[in-house]
Length: 167
Length: 167
DNA sequence: TTAAACTTTCAAAAATAAATGAAAGTTTGT
DNA sequence: ACAAACTTTCATTTATTTTTGAAAGTTTAA
Image (tube, rainbow over all chains, first blue to last red):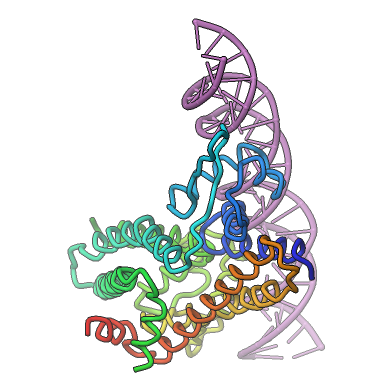
């Protein structure tokens, strides 16, 4: 396999994975492309390499910057903007975890708290509902807190986690 | 808020979350419905409560059983089948983690290994590509192993994780 | 073996999500 | 202030995913 094929395969795979994880395909593909690029890449290049439209490239680059995992760069004497990806994987994972916590876990917790707090008239249905949603609330809250703690380590958190675990 | 509204809100929320995590909306809704039901529920009831077609109910119940988080039950003297959800959250999370590892992480690892193993002709592009995909392979592999270890605890793994972490 | 009671399948339809591209907007150099 | 060089927006189109429902399949009991 030569570089061009490998690069393409990597981009396609990362894109497919992305769409299974709530990130859209193009967004994940752009990120993949930037991750394996030596140099910062212009929007024109992204469009060219992935064969996508200007609008699509613009919207998804913006989204990646909102996630904090792609940065804009300016080159001296160049009017146009260049983009680079966060390449440090610990940092990348932390940013993704934080963003998903904010966007998905926190709002879900709010609803869980709300629905688990209904008044019970002691029917079996109500008792079961309150019990299960309360458990769910506790579980998700605990998981979210662990995530928070883990990501506080930033550098090498995964390695540190492995070490803690093997003890 | 009364039970009916709360139940509905819970089902909708869980469904929306599901679709952000690569599980389809109906599948997540059915699971939510079963989680808060005292009794095993028939397909007819699922169709009725969620206002979905027979085919949809059948396909998604099957998918939930494939994931190992919904079980079939037979009632004495009843021809039709009833369904219950895994209600233990530790167990539920472990099953989901295992399934996603199998379906998504393992195949991704295979590709990462493949593309990171190309012959290099020492261009900057190739060096960067190999370096980054190798790092990614190592990272994902390590993460997958940690997941494995964690889920080996089964009972109370989350609590145990918290304890390890606070030390 | 038959038929009633139930479940599964899958082609077609509907719903949803993503991509396009041209027009509007912005920034920069002269 | 102007216009060239570039980016963003968003109504429309296109692609993808999900749902439907009727037909085919299966199981059970008599």
